[in-house]
Amino acid sequence: MKMMKIAVLTDSSAYLTQADIDRYHIYVVNDPVLFGNHVYHENVDLDSDKFYAMLKTEHVTPTTSQASNGEVQRVLDQALADGYDTAIVVGLSSGISGFISNVTAYAPSVTDIDVHVWDSRIACSGAGNQVLLAAALAEKGMSVDEIFERLAQLRETTKVMFVVDDMRHLMRTGRISNGQSLIGTMLQIKPMLAFTPEGKIVATGRERQMKRAFTTITTNFHKVVDSVDYPLRVSIVDANNPQMKAQWLAAGAAEFPSVTFEDSIIGPLIGVHTGEKAMGFIYARDWQSFLN
Image (tube, rainbow, N blue to C red):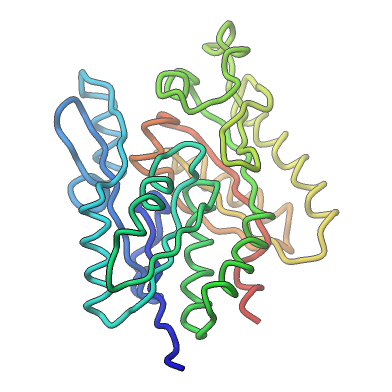
């Protein structure tokens, strides 16, 4: 029987490095970000530096949309042309985006390439590491079912503790499920947030300073480290807050020497919802430990 050749696709909000995209031959559907009637696309005409600069200078508030079926088809056609007959699409959490549901509805109409859809139930590098695992396992010749089994194990362990500088962005875009309780004090606090197992954003607490938020995060993470018997990987992500990211990385690596720390970003699509200066602490079982 002919072995499947599996391509791995994701949307640009996984914020993979170009080196990882090239190394694992990952296909990326670039997400749209709208300023008024002008549509930009991540990786095409909008990077993080430009987006956060525009956030300060533009008179219109940005909004997001999902990549069109036409754009998804264009990327699938490229995978087909490159010799793939099967595609796994790993996307941004269906709890905050319509991308997964749109691709799931569109997939049955796709001809010539067999499309399978995976909901990461998270964002940024939390989704990105699921993409990397899928691509690495596909490279090893594993089947879709085998890849999904390991993705499920990784997703189960993937959590995020993040803090936004200003709650108004999440309230405006409707991406927080229980934000009403924070409205009265949201200008004086730094809301602490997480993803539910279903992939929705919820408030979990509040701090008055980013420094105190990080202390709370590391206190909680100590409990995680003590409770697991597998290697952990942490991604520190920032929304145009590089100095604080450097501080969190250095402090985290010093406090948790057994944990692998890496850095990534909160880019334009997710930044529309978090606003500038947000910080995230995304942790999971190290995806590379699933390759053995």
